[in-house]
Image 1 (cartoon, one colour):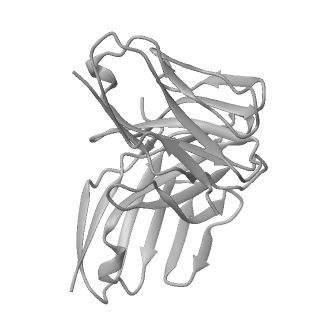
Image 2: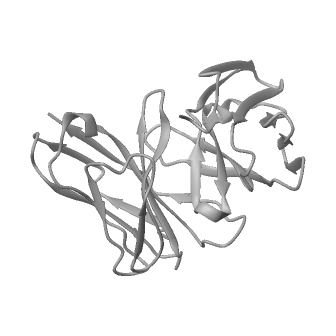
Length: 112
Length: 113
């Protein structure tokens, strides 16, 4: 039973436009949420995170939004660039259990 | 700045063989973990450790053993490989304090025939 779900396996966006990646979770006790980016043949790299006590965190072109009542997390990339083409994983962490849970990933393709 | 180092990068095993996937980190991280990545399944937690001498099971621990004798190393052992263990394996570490992300190695691609 997946606790973190990414329902869109892929997303295609034009360069310069906004990319919105979505993530849903089932466990209301998660304390910390993260987004990772993964290129082929490499390990995932940390992108941005948000604590459960916040609803928005911004870092340059990347913004993460958290809607706790809907148990929904989203990552906005503005403007999108071809180098952003990768697989994006959302993840959630619960302090009491010391476990990170990952979604199945969304493959983003940014077209020049 | 090595970070998390995994060896080997690729491995082919026959069913029933055993092997150890190595993972080492040089960041003095307390928390280490192993994940497997399968198509459509994302990253699933196999085992994790919150410090030397302490290990615990994740979502998919069957068929795998771990130990944590030092802070730096967290090897993953396959005792009797099965085709269902064909996957890409990632080791990851973090300082273990609150709001610290995981740092991943570059993975080991394992094929069991």
